[in-house]
Length: 380
Image 1 (tube, rainbow, N blue to C red):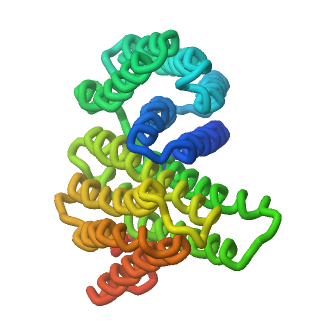
Image 2: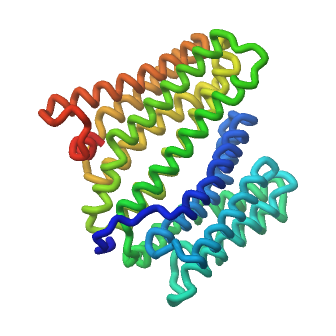
Image 3: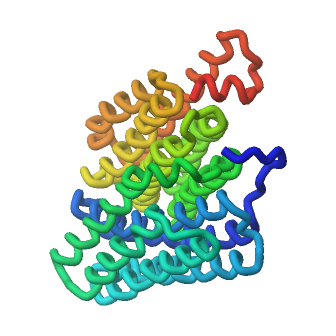
């Protein structure tokens, strides 16, 4: 961890770069809208992992050195352009835009490698491994088609996901700044939640007739999004920072909680957003199995991931959230036999009840009811 007393600020160039991520999240949602099957979800995940890993690599680079100089700003803009091209390629990534997707990823990693190694010796780390292995795999997949492309890109995604563990020895020596990293990953969660609002609001706004059912569905979807926000930002966000500040090996928290845990958080929010949009489109119909799985399964994944992150942070079990995840999965059977609007309201109520229960539990410990940092760390 860095010894600097001043708080490291998120650079304006990083926030500008995040605009690319907004489009990428939207494109992943569009892929899921088009195919609700397990295979469709797998293909969406395969193309989301590379752009997520580009974002993670850029964030770690900005965290471990001053990224507000002219060269680093230009470099971040260049990586952002590559991310934009990847996002534009996503709708046809498994078709005629595969080469663009793979080439843009490889170029982004090369640019990042230049930024990282311009004044330090080459080392075996996530950036160098992506240039030597995952980038070429994605580019090679772009030149193939059908099952070969999917297989090569799946291998690339698995390699990307494995690099933090494979390069742990190198990452242990990086001077991570806890506040900056916690803020950056929290901002990505905000991006995903914001996309969920757009996913339900845009179709409703363009509808020829805004009926009562649609308005009620939008309100329920917004309440659910607020509930998911509360779960993360009232209790967990400060816990992540505290865990980074106090960890014996911060690199392990970066790998386990930030890189892996937040991939699950963001993926879960995306799937929930797709389910909410489907409900808003047809609030009076019954949910198809695929939509119900995205809506309820995504929410269960979001809540259940806190069990993993809390154990990694503090070696404690997140009982309330694991129980809530199990309840949500149990309610899935009910959700498919009631109208879609009722299913969405039921899910929103479940998440809001979880937040209420946790708030009461914290208050009964004799701590301040306003939500101090200490109680949020304890409850996360």
